[in-house]
Image (cartoon, rainbow, N blue to C red; front, side, top):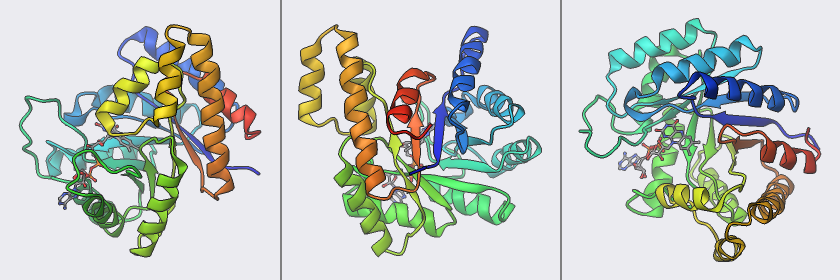
Length: 276
Ligand code: FAD
């Protein structure tokens, strides 16, 4: 069964990184993604790099989605950036609050992603397909799981068209989240975010920061592999392919891969799922 795919990249910092990412994209385009998205450093720190990468993807004939974080932004700066993205032919945004590095004051005219979604909708009508973030295992700063679910529903009511989740390795959390959101009237498609496992230290670091849970059995197995990267990669491919298979059997609308600017693991998973 076919399933739409999308791939996420972060903006490279050097010309060598940009060239490497161009080759990664070329490989990933062979499986015909619906779109490719590019992350955006909160506070606008990567704005140029994000827009350059978005522009390169559009020029390659693939739909690009620009992530857009609003923390610290003003309405005027958001309008200016939206106009730039529109002039580049971009039709999809991932609208986020973002996290400012510690030491930055909050400031800005937007507090939550829902404020940004409402603003983009009121200013640009249906020019953009707006994606928002969803957290099946609860956002780390949420007051409670219910408050977080309500915050998600507020983003959808503000005008989001669909959502992409934080990554997770427990499909029950995803299906429960979707059921609960639908019961509250937030019925837009929720696309699971998939993080291939290729390195145990990197995964632990990201997961501590994002609140994504690594099930104990996965953590223990990864620890037991130590520096044996071949075994970590082989195990990671099995675990993540199984997860995607469960999600597909449960009727997910699409799969969104956090590629970390690498193609090998994502392509192998897509191949094993016979989606490519
Ligand atoms: P929000 O939806 O605003 O939620 C933030 C917190 O506030 C949550 O705890 C929520 O429960 C709470 N909250 C929301 N509304 C209210 C309210 N009205 N009252 C009280 N509490 C409320 N970060 C980047 O910097 N750049 C990126 O490119 C990027 N891409 C991402 C892509 C995806 C698919 C995901 C899942 C995350 C991404 N992130 C990115 C991380 C994201 O910016 C952080 O998780 C951030 O902390 C929250 O952003 P949000 O848009 O989910 O915020």
